[in-house]
Image (cartoon, rainbow, N blue to C red; front, side, top):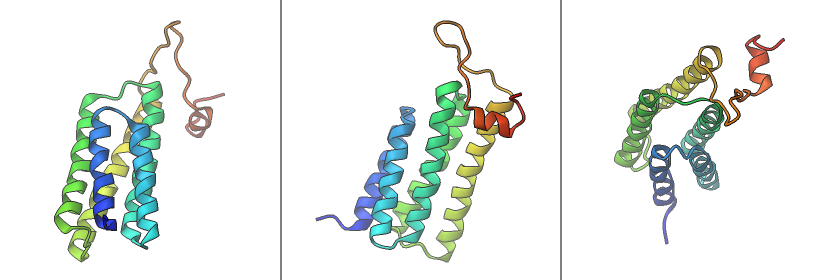
Length: 150
């Protein structure tokens, strides 16, 4: 029988593989599973990790539906995700103060990078075209927040 650390790391290890296939829905579902595993054993650092990644992949999936995300941006995110995985594997989920600071910084970098991608794509990038040649709409609520919808 697996212990929770093994289960958590196994699920987290799957995220970079799904990410490399631009399967952001799969990544989000894995993040939700991380939350469940961590919550079951009261591993609050794991809950935080899962919550941040769940929001990151929900945002990336929505952006990916409407825009072509640049390869360089995805490579940067992939590197950050893999750095978190290395930290978690090397510490075996024993998050001491030094690791906690590094983990927080990496999570902050991932969340910040996705937020910058969101804003730049909403403000600057042109949406994908449907087969009919009509631009795909971006969610109206997001556009209203930015003052781009009458």
